[in-house]
Every structure is written in structure tokens, then in C-alpha cells.
Image (cartoon, rainbow, N blue to C red; front, top):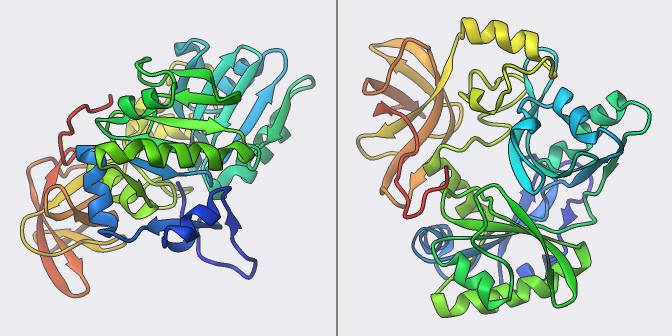
Length: 372
């Protein structure tokens, strides 16, 4: 998920834009899309709490969609992106990264492996065109890379009651984490994947663009008996930060590599090739900074780009910071000098005010049914 500042062109809208406006949502430009940040009736904290305790539904149709098809499509994707697609079977999804030759992150994305010859990708909104461009430029004869950004919507159902919500709609549940099922809902095709960006048990549904409004309406009705809520991207951000999940453009970027972000688990180090391999291997041997969690010990909320120091000496910078609705205190992700370890105390400069924080390993909270 990537934020972007408004330009001279009007932002794009999801297939559910009219629904959000009718609900009175606070809208804002997010990755070039006019998306709901929060809804009336409690705002971010209430929506966050609904997901942690019950269930929430998000419109994340701004996320990109693309396909790579043709003989050997999976092998082609495997030679480009960091993670090892050969670790998973058809019907499984995988988190991976698209890097440049310097090891910087062009985007982080989800790969849906349909077959050896058919791969579906969900990149971040603002990065979709660039990911598609790079893949198209590298594709050999017989491999087709297609931008499907506005062919499909994406709806996320997250929280401990998410299975019951999907079952009320007759959709499949209970499949393994990071696996997907191609299902049918009222005669409409929809992909049901056990993924999410909150840490809670949940699903991401990928319907056709024009089918998304009807599915959204059914989900909003189905969450009502569980006191669930439609949720905006504000709650999505606090939920992901509590879990220590990175946000592209803040915790991952062309200047922040998978090694620095401690996302090396999503790199197939034993693969023969992938974009940025040589640079990442060199950095892995001697990293200059590493991502860690910061738990503020007093009152105050750290924000991105706040300076971090230790004993009066510069130690790093906050990449994401927020108020944790679960912990009722400030939390942050920060790039710190690699010698700093968990348990140490550091200071965060927030507009001239010093906040003390403890270095910790995320997640900041233990959820009811935490995803791996």
C-alpha cells in the first residue's frame, strides 16, 4: 500500500466510491485514488477495535492487479521477483518484492500462483504501472504481462468473526493461510484468499470490478450481527503498524532494501537469479541499518522522519509511527544502526520534544488468531 501526494490530475475512484460517499466516509487521496480513510461512528479507533475484537470490511480496490501468462510464466516471475515461487504450489499465494539492480524496492506485492503458466499479481496502487512495465520489458517471447488494475476489485474481511461472515454469504472458508480458492458467489466469480494486512484471521476477496458493489453490500449486511464495521485505510494503517508490517513508500522504498527492512525472509537467497540479487547479497553481509520496533514509554506519538538518538548520538530515523489503539501508546518502526539491539532505550525527537522508547521486535501486540 503506497501513499502519494495529490497531483494536477483527479484521483481515480474505486467501484465502491458511491457507497463510501453515501456512508459519509472521510475521503482522501491514497496512491492516486480517492479512498475512505474513516467512517462516522467512532472513526479509526472504533474501526481498529472492531477488527481486533470482531470483524471489519475494507475496500482496497485501489490495489493493483496484473497477470503473467504463457508457457513458463511462473519460472519467468521467479527469475524477476525476490521470493521463490517454487516453494509454493498452485492455489497458493506468496509475499514477494520487486527490486531494482541496486536492491531498492520498486514494490512489494502478492503473487497468486494459478498454474505454471498463469500467475496473478497484486501490487500496490501507485506502483502497478512500473511493476508491469519492468516485467513487460523483461518478458521473453510467449510471455504476456497484462495490467488489470481496473478489471477487479479487492475487498478485505478481517477479524476473528471473518469466517462466519463469509459462510453467511456461502463463500468458502477454512483453507490454509496464503492459499486461495476460485469460487462462485451468486453466479459471479470471486477469488477468496486467506491473506490480509491486519494480523487477524481474515480473507481478501477479488471479484470482477462491476461485481464489487453487490459483494460489498452483502458483506456490510453480513457483518452487522457481529457488530462489525466498514473500515477505512486509517484503521488499516494502525492495524498493520501494530503487527510491524511494512508500508511501501515509508518502510520499503528504492532507498530502503529488503535487508534493511528485515524482509530477507521474502528473498529466495538460493535462487540462481532475481532482480537485485548481487546488491542484496553484498548488503546482507554488512548491513548499515536495520528496521526495529520502538515502543514509546511515556506520552507522545512518533511520526515518520523523526530523528532517533541513543545517548545523545544519532542512531536512526522513524519510518512509520502512530498511536496504537490496542496498547494506548505510541509505537513506531525505525531504521536504526545495526548494533542497536532489542531492549535498549532510545530517544525520539518529535518536533523538539524528546520521547523515550524501548527497542522491541514487532509485532507490538499479540492478536487472537495471529497469521504467520
